[in-house]
Image 1 (tube, helix red, strand yellow):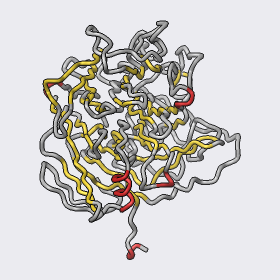
Image 2 (spheres, one colour; image 1 turned 60 degrees about the vertical axis):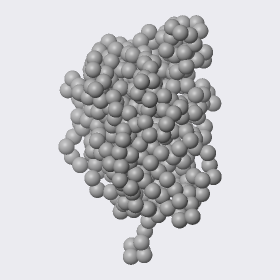
Image 3 (tube, helix red, strand yellow; image 1 turned 30 degrees about the vertical axis):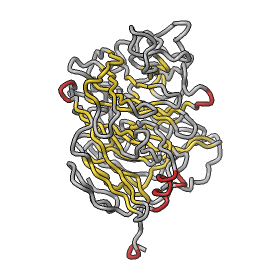
Image 4 (cartoon, rainbow, N blue to C red; image 1 turned 180 degrees about the vertical axis):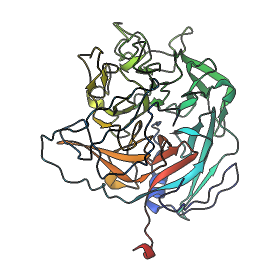
Amino acid sequence: MRLSGTCRHSLALSGHNGGMGEPRLRRILFLVAASAVLVAPGCSFITDGAGDDTAAEAPDELPSETGDITVEGETTEGESGDDDGTTDNGDDATTTTTPPVESPDWEELPLELELIAEFEEPVALSARSGSFDLYVAERAGIIRRIEITFSEGANRERISVANRAVLDISEMVTTDSERGLLGLAFSTDGRFLYVSYTDLAGDSVVDEYDIERRTEVVVDSRRELLRVPQPFSNHNGGHLALGADGFLYLGLGDGGSANDPQGHGQNTDTLLGSIIRIDPFPDGEESAYSIPSGNPFAIDGGGAPEIFLWGVRNPWRFSFDQLTGDLWIGDVGQDQFEEINHLPAATGGGRGANLGWAGFEANAPVEGAVTPEDHVGPAYTYAHEKGRCSVTGGYVYRGELHPSLDGVYIYGDYCSGEIIGLQMTDQGNIARLLSVKTERDQLVSFGEGADGELYVINQGGQVLRIEPLEVTDEEG
């Protein structure tokens, strides 16, 4: 992969000592002064869209199907299919009902992707309370630690990858189709590690481990929290995150195949096709976890008590805004559209929301399906065109390196490799391509450090940090 800028760190892989880079002073001052804040983050095996073989172009603006503002762009028919090989593309033109807004000040922000470390098929990254280290999940079932240390006096940052794995459950994980180790998160106090994976039977499993030491978990402490049978090998979801409420959230796809053949998306008696919320601490000897009383079906029934919201197809990465607690979801579409859901904490954060699948693909009613009357529509959608076919959900930026990006939701498309900023405005929602991208069919995930900086995870093996582009005197 080609980086958009030069790599300024001398990396230490496989346990060797790393070189001393030259990070910006304000990051060090921030890291030294601030307490670590844990907001857990948030491929060919992730997507089931076909995508075309034409190199993705990078238009200035993205066409949208949602909001009051049309973000103009060339309307074309993309090629994308699901597991059944079907293709059904629609017109992505919309009508503007409000005047255009001024371009956001971050639109031309010069950025680069700086290589931090390399792994074997990384799929997820998380921070841990009390440390600035990063923990990376490899799809095969291994979690590794990126050790980050700072020298305040020397204004330097040192990065190395520990030789010893934090956890190795590769003998318990299957990686065919879209399966594998798919998510990790830490408890608020950093004492427990939660992992989400598909086991040898293909079931989605969430386990808990003690991690009182810095370097590795206590393997014998494994405790199974949850197991959900999967009827097909795709749409596993699998992302884990801790909310500001301290509860554990898990995203599960609709069970796979295409067109939700078993109707899981609108069936609240199953955990498939939903984002669930549990308290990992059991309320008795007979349970592995307890149910938060605020869950929509916790008290009066009507559905599985674990469900927080439902009607998702394959929520490939969701996250909570560090500042507001808002929930953001990237839900992978089928033949036509990808969607971003924004669920403000001030109005419940999505509790009890029906996001519509399989009655709706984004805002488009699915032909022949019953469309739910309580559908909560997405904040933004985009069509399958110019090589785009599968959304990779990201994070609202709350770091220190890019002040103009504060409050902008950063996400991307797996197939095109484009990285996109989405800004909510009083007149509508605006999406703009950022000045960095990854290789096609590689943008598998994003991650967030304890300092709010964002990382891009490339399925080819790279973890990269979104950095300001440093222009040399020769470059002007």
